[in-house]
Length: 570
Image 1: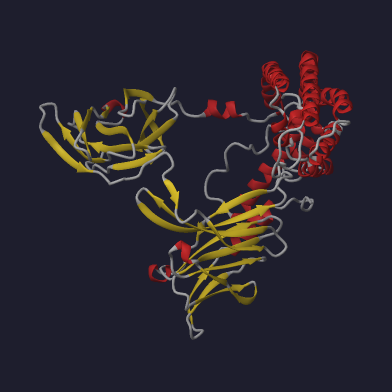
Image 2: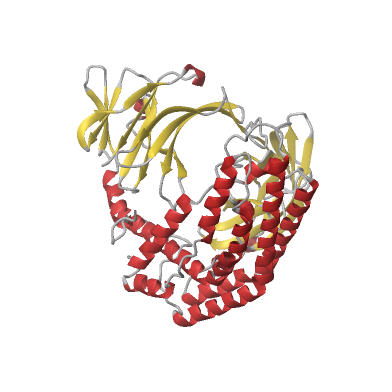
């Protein structure tokens, strides 16, 4: 935790006012920055005492409610095995409620830090509120942000709230928790956006740059002094029964036995490990690209005689892999320019589930491209030649949108729910051109801030012949109530798709695809609440050609399981 710096004060960064910076604007900005530096300085000087108070607060909470959440569903992982729609909804609700209580716990822990910040803000406010700029948005933003930052919330009674949740069987949160969530959402939703972009053009004087350097150094010092808070927070979480990320990591299986090391043709070191007893019997994992392996690739029981070659593009590099024969001791990779790369396969010994081998290599893209592998035995005889999949245009950003990028084809609002838009994209990926549709849903209330969901979940609609006529997809949600957005690409506009089962049958809205996407046909879409139970494909005469049931019952069950027992939060 670090102090809330006034350099983050907020207003929407609209188009900056034109014209050269004026002397009064630069003077006001310099005064603002000096007040900001004094604020951060005060926070840094007070940090030792504040940290002591936070540690005392942690000890108090540990003594007040030890182990209260030991039996709670944890946010790491998900119930194993096949789950019903209701079980998935209940798991989602438990995870959300646990997140509420974790927020409460964090607020209670850092209450001394927050109180110190508010006290220091009084001096800062007295220095910056009288300042004026030629752009009136700056002063308004400073006023709004100071008001928001000075609002000090009462510490949550988190132990009582956690006990309430435990007593309900981890199904319902208390009224106090509901009030806490509502207040947090409102505060975050109404918090102004950064005004800092409006000040940048006034910060170019030598004096302003010097103060900015001081602020940066102070913030680094604050971050260094605040590091013990992470250990305090982890200790408290464990004491009340929460699993931390470190705890989950410690439970993971051991990485396995190292069987080989090397360096790829792209210059990256790699390490191959073998584990037995996993779900795939024998697991081989190669980590490469950094200390401990920033990237990894793996195989399960690669002991068949088939080569099963693959070439994958990742961040402008081509990863080549294949099974090798038991007697293979050397593999030559031939590239499209005629050059070859020789390397030994990864050998898995009998004691670890072998004997078998795996070829692994990484070369830089986009060219030359890998073409074939030749396996040799210890005597230099050719054992097998394997042709590789042809992968072209493997660059750091292999997806290249065509004709100006994604295009919005339709916008709308779910009945009683969020806004959405449907985007058409035509792009080139690894030498091939693709077309797809995506739906973007703006959820107005998710922890107080609007966010964007993107989905392309595919529905199986009839036979392969019919799927060439219409390829539907869907986006579903339980917030604020069960709804479904159905959309897809109609290749033959003469046919009609009807949504049935939720009231009168309704046709999906048709939008012709623009010429810029170079695809014929139409976008068909509809937003429904309650969701429809089936789709029907009708020909030009109105005769139903095919119907496809939708898993509406599963969605309703999931939403029922996810619903808050005390009613939805506003």
